[in-house]
Image 1 (cartoon, rainbow, N blue to C red):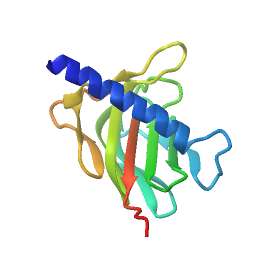
Image 2 (spheres, rainbow, N blue to C red; image 1 turned 90 degrees about the horizontal axis):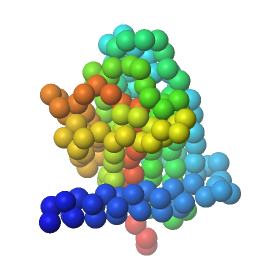
Image 3 (cartoon, rainbow, N blue to C red; image 1 turned 45 degrees about the vertical axis):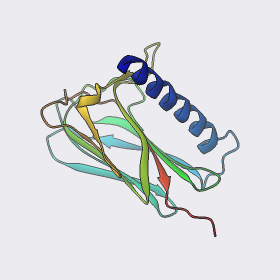
Image 4 (tube, rainbow, N blue to C red; image 1 turned 90 degrees about the vertical axis):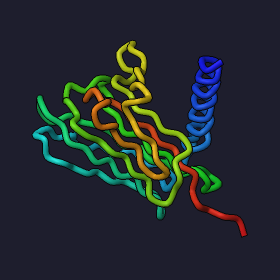
Length: 169
């Protein structure tokens, strides 16, 4: 029964992400509702933060990594047409990062997290997304972080979707 529940939760989460991508990033999306920017992930063990946002909603990615050289990463943020959902994805477009992450945290400002997942490898070059084990990440109301002692230092993608506090009058 627990396995069936996990499969249902996974399928529901996948469907939610698919629907939200369609809602948040339609093909004729206005540039003020979606944004993708490139940034460098720098090794050296120093804590770095990269932040992007739309309107009053912000996504911050804080990390420390070791090994290799700088890697080009992307951050995409999007706000649904009805202003109820804000999404943030951080990923390495080449698929797998060669850096070892000693820590990471994604923080959403102005939203409550509805869905989050992290991956050790992203779909690129014929490869599939490889999600981290559930025990490797901790999902809170506004943050997704590595779990001390459980995280295996591999991160290539992080996806977070939050419900805004937007209320209708």
